[in-house]
Length: 640
Image (cartoon, rainbow, N blue to C red; front, top):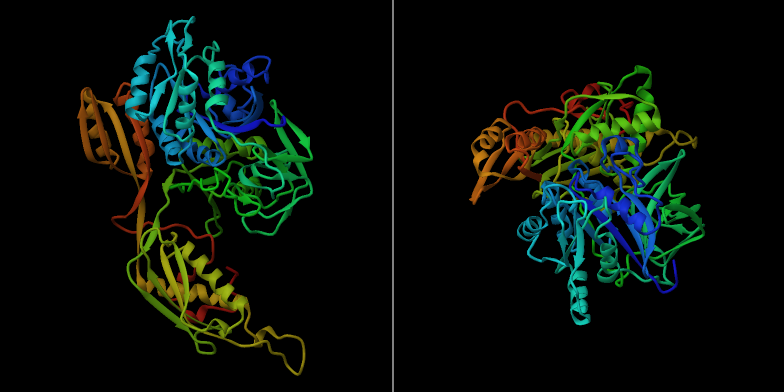
């Protein structure tokens, strides 16, 4: 990076098919990174590296390319456009300085466009809009600009106009802006109080250099810092050539080879190698300075979302920016096509889940099943492609189901005293479990003295509590609960006639871990739980003349419209739909609305299920099956 230059980490985001990846290719071509712009149709794009991405023509994993434009080094991050990969988009947003939101001049503002704009506004990120495909038949820049200002925000304004729209000769003509106006414009755009709109074509190149000039002129960047400790954020973990590469934004200081760095407070890990994104290539370096994105080797425990180094400094404009990733609400059981691949499949899925905190992998040894969490149906294709291409394992999937939770309906308590039947463990544990407000999480409290037993035993109790709350009475996680320890007791380390330590006479951490699971299971049964399924809040905009058929379809998918507003030729509906019905609605809406319907949804709350409570297979030994007959419990109870 040149001395005195600034860096700008920029995301390109869009609804699928808006031309986002094509725009990225054209930008790289105009910047001199590529000798020709790749084509999504031809499958030779720079940023779509996965085979599935090339086959489907969609972007799934964020890709990074760095290059210089004017006096700015741009880290260009190409992000997914499909709604199933919104979590991947949100991860990228955590390391961005600004974003380009691509809108089609033909289709206009679409469903995912609204979702993305809301995420950008929530993070107060500066946004430049690029209306693409002005050369396509049916392009209507004026109509799309009106849609942008009415549906995305009145803060949007055009920086130029289009001539010859809808023809191959379509061109972008920027408005003249004086120095005073430019200064005010720069201030409002950097504060995310105004959103400039440019027009052009990724295919012909119209308006693309104007876009690059606007980015370098109006958007904020960061100057290199020296003399401070390296700090930053991990936003991607890749497997490459059998190794593990961590992509991280260095926010302050410099990251150097052989540095030992803490990640989210865990023990420090050594940087064994560094590579820097430079003009479409990864170049080995000894140091990566603030503002740049590093490919780090040696961080074996790093996960997406980890922050490294000390707490971010006050001067870091991104210090307060973080995305709270929405959890997946669906899951599916994965089966290996070849029975001999079951072990390899589980190992591969475990590795993927280890890299990604949003992939929840569950193994049910009793049923010999492995389940993974999902945001949508397209993720099945992605998982299958990764397993086949990178691990040589072919898989199939069972029908997708909702991930429910269990909510406490009352207060429950239980205790088992040491040396008193039927307690088979050399431990004494009493627990009370109480419901907490939704969203409060888990709390652990003591009604005993902290020094009443060794710290390792308290740690074991916490581990037993966490394991039990992950799989409640019906097998679902129990959120928002307070567990109070009311009894404790243990046998100190003992031996016969000065011999070595005798486990049969002395309490161990495993005694407390195992007994805690059984005691808490008993308390949960006494408290009572109700199984609740995930409910999405949806918004649906449709042509007014299709409203009747749309309402009928929503009813068939158990969707409940709560608000309906008719304005001109459009109707806007808002309501609730079960998470497991979202995909069905998404599939039917285009057919019922001539492709004009715009459907968006997101997790809103959990609601009690009706009828028999659905159950979930357990990944651990079942303590609830044991509490009815304590005499069957043996000291050999498996580890939690």
